[in-house]
Length: 465
RNA sequence: GUCGGGAUAACAUAGGGGCCAUGUGGUGGACUGCAGAUCCUCAUACGGGAGUUCAAAUCUCCCUCCCGACCCCA
Image 1: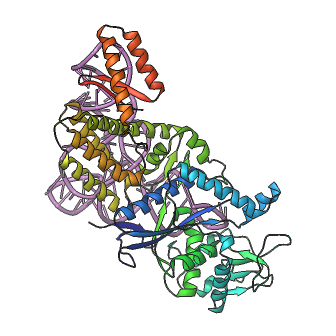
Image 2 (image 1 turned 90 degrees about the vertical axis):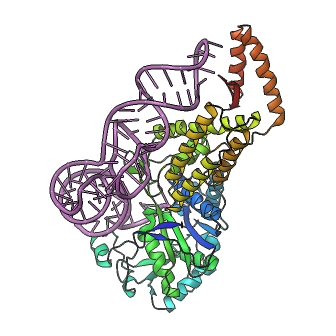
Image 3 (image 1 turned 180 degrees about the vertical axis):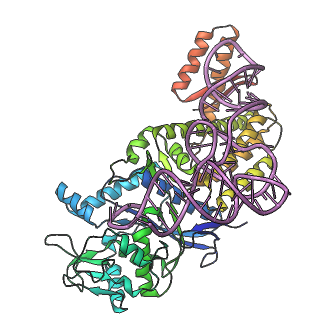
């Protein structure tokens, strides 16, 4: 069984073969930091977080890089409105990004390069592209990539240059030799943030930063390049051209693109104004629920965002969490019974098989529900041993390193166990003497403290809410 | 228009030639002082049309519709 990845470049699912055995170099496009991130960004972040974690789980040594675009028109405009320097604005939203990422349980990338701090690499690359004859300096000091110089434009987009040119809505730019040419260096307008370059003061075009940062941090060629599918054209297409203009080699072997989050059938985006900030959503739903919501569907599928959908995710996840809590309760009980080896191994195999199949997290979660059904049954008839419960729990913790959907806090608080034993015993006496009012009050007040008491045929059980 | 991804029960989603898919919600039971959880049970499916096949939700072809990309975007 081996990992398969849907490659946008070929449009097919392919066996994953890394450049260096046992190692993976992955670059995931980050965000332009001029505002808080929204749920669409969250989807991409959670998806690739799962991808990176699964690669590591599978034994690969992964180097993961995600960039920040911190120099750009929108940042400049926002900064002007706010009356602060652009890099101060972007620095602020980088801080907010990390705050939100943490709230979503996103693991840290190895490096987070910024455009503003990669200027030497960028300028060197622009110069190299010019030297190799793929770009030209315009009268105003901007540098444009000459798309007609490459023979196979559109490999990722699966369209020919002529197709695109005839359908494009590109504003006429007198500086360009061909209207499909794109800026890799933009000359500065008066008073605008800029860096010195051989072509005068200016700043990088949007696509060049990724090409330059990948090259300086990961080398000429990487294994996986990821991002939202809205980046396929022109961003990723152009990254390919820029890098190849220097190296003569393909930039990445596998291109992965996540599907868009939609609101009422329309893409969630800043420009449409239909976005929900991670901050708002994270204040109402815990990170586990948000992660479950996104991972409960394949990363490439479109997903329609709604509060109802999150509520449903919350209800669904509760089933898994209840099962997890019940297993913890059984594990504490010191009971005899099945060791659950077969069930756990079956679930692990099924889980891995799904993720190996183009990171099908939905299928992996389905395996968890199947396992929960089996263990619930065993819990209901008391046929699972404490060791068995612990075995299942340990498996769930193992895979949760990737999914991040189970409760994060530990439950092995001996003191709490003892206190609960006492409370349950006292409440039992009350119930025996039919003092239900008092018994219920104990239960209600424990609920306020996020501890759930359940009266079952096998005695009283408790778990955290 | 050109490219890409889709259409699966009430809803949200997996699957991808034959075998009881998963969850939410709904039905009826079991358990139960109540509540909750859990178990059992039932119902509702593969956009439309041709074809291939012993067998199609799954393969092929055609059609319809939806979303996205083609200016910025995760």
